[in-house]
Length: 217
Ligand SMILES: *[C@@H]1O[C@H](CO)[C@@H](O)[C@H](O)[C@H]1NC(C)=O
Image (cartoon, rainbow, N blue to C red):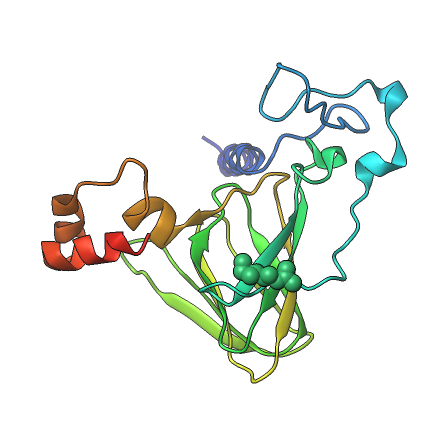
């Protein structure tokens, strides 16, 4: 096979992968979600375009800090297709994140989105961990105005390392990024729970330790 053909095949393969990795491209100007429709096809059915209004594309309130009085000391205020029906099929979303001093946004992943986070106030230590077998911990301390990227699917976190409140805005490459909080959702807080003997072997700890942690969720 000629080198140019191989190159072409590689390009086709690459573009195919890329198109699978993000939300579907809309085939119309917009598809404002009709939350009352029983039809669901990788997103929500479209509202009659003739009935669409500016408010379908609108969200208000991101100037207000989230309530961080919780064990994490952080609060995420999401703006996804669940809040703004006009985001349906568009493949983007936004969130405001507030952090108390030393508050954390605990390790989690977004199964459907990469994330780009901008610090508006304060200082954040951020990090993500790469896939097996390397499991490299990529981490950095960010100041106001700094931006950091969390690649799709990778476990990541933020921690306020300043003495004042911190605020960040995150943009995500899905209308419905999804959140899997590692400790709660997957490991210790699933319903019904994962058998303790599985967690004992996975975490190299005793059943007493596993059962104790499970009581916290
Ligand atoms: C913040 O959340 C805490 C805990 O749920 C609650 O007690 C408190 O009233 C909330 N504060 C505001 C201003 O909503």
